[in-house]
Image 1 (cartoon, rainbow, N blue to C red):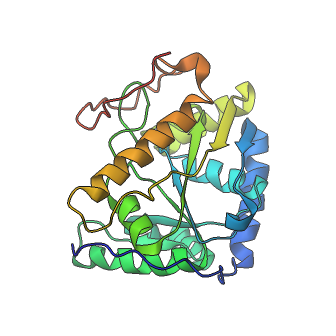
Image 2 (tube, rainbow, N blue to C red; image 1 turned 90 degrees about the vertical axis):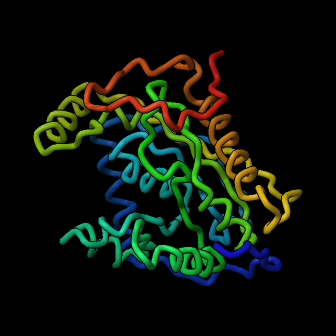
Length: 265
């Protein structure tokens, strides 16, 4: 990939969220209320509330998108979500993603490099939400894994600030291996137990001293993003620092992308 370039100060946001997407946010908020207790803390500064802005969230469950959709509604933010092309190809979900104005990323395909340009244009006119880890994390302690450099490159190219968004508890609702049977069982269990799901908007991550295009800059920025996300998550899982109390038996363990710093106290 060519060296990143930093844009000038991003212009004011111009993208208007489709009414369909706003309606889905309200629906997600209502659905969460039936299944769990949602606690949203932290905030996004008013000048950034409608973009340009990158929200970088940890990924722990297939239920995450619904949790984040509800949490951003609570904070009156309507982000565009960067998601894998497979979701856009699904019959119903794909239509909903396109109708909401979300951003398609076709991994492992020839046009994946085009996604950066599309995302940069999107960030310059709106709020964009990304998962810097690039997948549901498989570290058994459920701290953020090593990130991919896409989020850092997006920040460099757009000039937009990055706000970490940590979530905890969604893994108790829908398991990693989300078959129809396990999903229904998880929803029924959650409706009965009503677990607490926490979402915390953290402090914007300072990348101002990094020079785009310099070898290693994107990797260093990625490490800062994961550090910021880890610190933000630590604020809402103080009593589960060593590992989760609830262990999903369907989640495989993979230490190949374990990040070197994992809070334990």
